[in-house]
Amino acid sequence: MYPYQITSLAQYHEVYQKSIKDPEGFWAEIAAHFSWRKPWDKVLSWNFKTPEIKWFEGGKLNITENCLDRHIEKSGDTPAIIWEPNNPDSPTRTITYRELLFKVKQFANVLKNNGVKKGDRVCIYMGMIPELAIALLACARIGAIHSVIFGGFSARSISDRLQDANGEYVITCDGSYRGNKEIALKPIIDDALVNCPFVKRVIVFSHTNTPVSMHKGRDVWWNEEIEKVEEQGNPDCPAEEMDAEDMLFILYTSGSTGKPKGVVHTCGGYMIFANYTFVNVFQYNPGDVYFCTADIGWITGHSYIVYGPLSAGATSLMFEGIPTWPDAGRMWEIVDKYKVNILYTAPTALRSLMSYGVEVVEKYDLGSLKVLGTVGEPINEEAWHWYNENIGKKRCPIVDTWWQTETGGMMISNLAGVTPSKPSFATLPIPGVQPVLVDEKGAELEGNNVSGNLCMKFPWPGMLRTTYGDHERCRLNYFSTYDNLYFTGDGCLRDEEGYYRITGRVDDVLNVSGHRIGTAEVENAINMHTGVVESAVVGFPHDIKGQALYAFVICSEHPRDEQLMRKDIAETVSSVIGAIARPDKIQFVSGLPKTRSGKIMRRILRKIAEGEMANIGDTTALLDPAVVEDIKTGKL
Ligand code: PRX
Image (tube, rainbow, N blue to C red; front, side):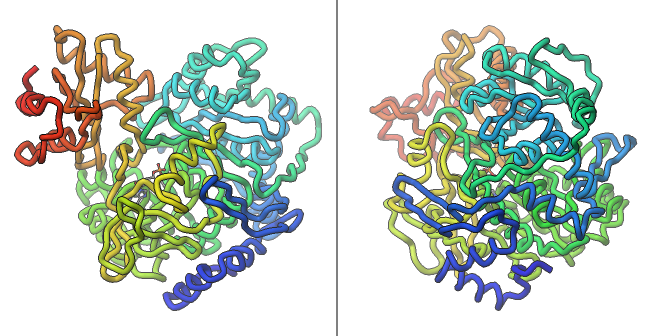
């Protein structure tokens, strides 16, 4: 039990009311349970117009002291990370808190030896191995700002991010394993760095023994650098004293316009929010084995594989592979093997596993499970019931956690077994979170049984502070749509009982297999193909991915081989963004439905992509309504 753990519905309501009436007192009480070098002077100052948000100003801490050092005395021998490799026949690893602290200090010293200083940006591009978590924590130990890039992104995406953050240091692996694939990562970094001559050092961890080229003067091996640290004979690395508002990390995410933006999270507020939500939503109890299937390349991995669980002294199970390899029982095998108590995964993974039938599940003993969680996209009722019946055996509460890269932690979710769950509803806000629904004009929709755009009217400690290097972009994206509100970009329903149900994005951001993809970004990538004049990308429902990408493309001349051209376009998207953004369908068209002012009417394209040809709606505002007929009939 944690002192701030809510254990009954009545207590939830009481705590929630308190958190609204006196947010500062509420969060200060929770923050007092953490390790601070110096207490804060002021709990909160905020202004949503500029925006400027500061939590625990003047407070000094280091997040790694909270995630590691403070647990050593009582739970030094508790497993911090249990690692399950991609291949079930390869050796597993268990790293206790004591060992993890040792490794983090060691690697922090490697970073220092290589010139990394407080405030420097370090880009991390690795597979799901413990060294990835160690790299994050080592950066945090010395006050360097990490920017993790998901292993599925292309060289170009990496160089864009490196340039945006002016990252002079890179940590990577020779390669990674995912299912039956061995993916060479270092060559992708090499390609990315052609456009980043400012990168001073690349530290390479050898995991797959894939042959790689090592550039003299720039690239060094992780293990050799560790040996140097051992030779230096000082295993200690005191944690850098950080201000609560110093940057902890940057994580790039897609928006409705332009290139991905670097969401910035800071040390103090983020830590407290990740921890508080972890403990309360999952009802974690010391000794529980907790398994989050996300990748550390996304926010879920940052907050709920690394910082949330470790700050709570929890045992976090990390899995290198994919749920369907060597077969679709892999996740259940892991649950059985480690007697997992809490499982946190994505609806898309569940939908994919459902299609293999329950026989695969029945081979394993899932009796250890106590709590199930989902994240990343709305969970459809069918998947919810399947999860409940076949995995939780109707005895495990399911927490449907709604949140975003920008929110740092869970915002709307039931608390496992404490507050009620409702299929496809994220249900109620976390204490301290003040959601509002607004109409198009920003007027608040009060009462129950209303639908609108989801906003927040008060800051919470885990919220983003800025977008790296471009504060105005942060203001425009999140704080300018509605006066004095943070706008999430999501549509939402509040039902007759006051429960929240997220209905999906209301902007041009798609959610493909739980991955956030901006349509503008994919269009820019498609347009880079020499034969393409213009394109428009919309989403359409997909049984497994939730949403999939449909691209309407105008070519400069009719492709001689349409199939080959589709492949070329998909390849272009892969090389510009990464394979995750490859369109599922590409239709060649002669024109796009545009208004007189030249704006593409995506509503029409969405209907066509969804196959709702008869239901296109009003086309009178179009410059050339005939275009719609051509697209519908496939005429070029
Ligand atoms: O549309 C919402 C959807 O995912 C978006 C945030 O994506 P990202 O920043 O990549 O973070 C994903 C992991 C937190 C949201 O704007 N989303 C996330 N969780 C849910 C969800 N939609 C419905 N229900 C959820 N539980």
